[in-house]
Image (cartoon, rainbow, N blue to C red; front, side, top):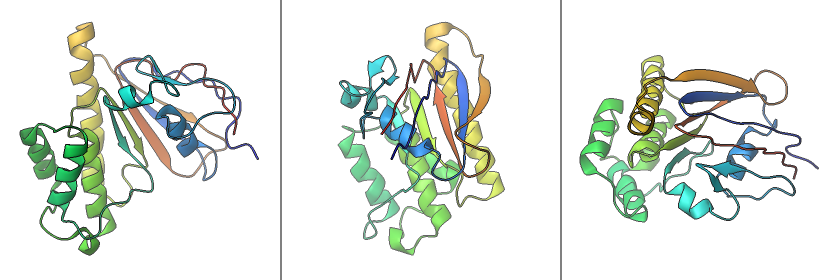
Length: 205
């Protein structure tokens, strides 16, 4: 069975890119290939100019990722979960993390098992942005969020493009583009990046 075939995709500097398609079209598979979580049977993928197979660990240091099947520690509080993830990254800027939590109205002190899907999703979004990544890859990021918070997530994406692009290009230009994987419908995935994310990614599994 082939999960993804004949994909040739490039995301340019300054783009907020929407990747659309029905369930099973290969959106999450594409993301996992980019992050080096799985390997293609043929073809090549790169992120931030680094090969997704041979340099994925180095690339992931500069990537924020929110999986579609987000799993958190049910026995931890939101604060404990974010502290744990920050340690795994070698530390993050606490004021940046705290500002994100305040902005998204994250409940930090209740056990995660007591939180609604939307409140869990907020923790996932914070962990994706809290280390100020150069590239943000989000798989169905607005799932469970109310319309106001959905708009806030899109604002965060635009701010990330501007912040990441400005020091290198002296430009705050950004664009939004969507492409479909398979037929229309289903969930969506978003990639915000200041540089090329996917090159000649013809991959089959």
